[in-house]
Image 1 (cartoon, one colour):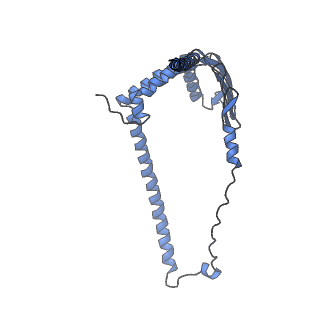
Image 2 (tube, rainbow, N blue to C red):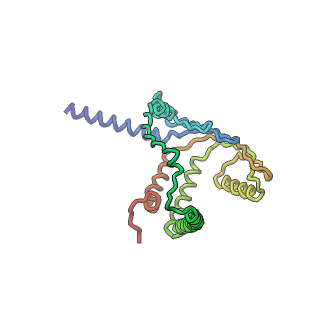
Image 3 (cartoon, rainbow, N blue to C red):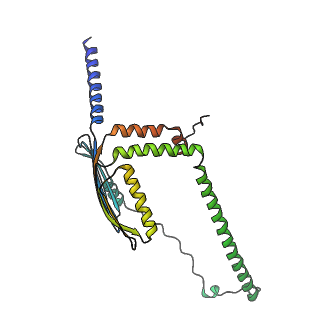
Length: 271
């Protein structure tokens, strides 16, 4: 009887620890801070921490080289730089030498068949060259039209009711996720333009509309309607709770249209 009670106590303690960890994960937010810039080349870094920084993530993009590091307590569970070093440390096998073909003699290079007529050879060569060019142009035209038709068919597919329903569903829930993870502190200062006043104004108006929908303040952007340039310095920071975002992501994953069209799973269509 005493052994049975001891086993029940151990099981109760295990469930209590698991439950406490779940509650701790729910009530503890994930914090993040990001910095980025673009002056000819993109550069930036992101720092994130969860469970009171027991889990930490650091990502950096500098000089065209990404770097990602994940730590739990004092242990590094993932480091992208170490993998690259291991790959560099491996010795490459020397490529097998190709057997060189025996060089032809000088007389063989200029050998001409006595039975062939040089003038007729030249005429057929010119004819084949002209017909080859015509055939090549015709093949390119057919290939272009075929690709255009495939792209048009792929675009028209997304206009049917089921695809429109999926787009509306993803748009609605994607906005919900963005509103929950949006930064509490945001600052962007920049100057840029496309070199065309019309397209610069369109991009500026659409980006302002998107920032207004997401409720992101702190944007200071000066358009350049004459030159083609882009200079940006941005900082962002905030926090969000993982459970609400995970529930929305689970809702998206369980959607039948999402499974059918995005995950390519064989699910029967509802009548």
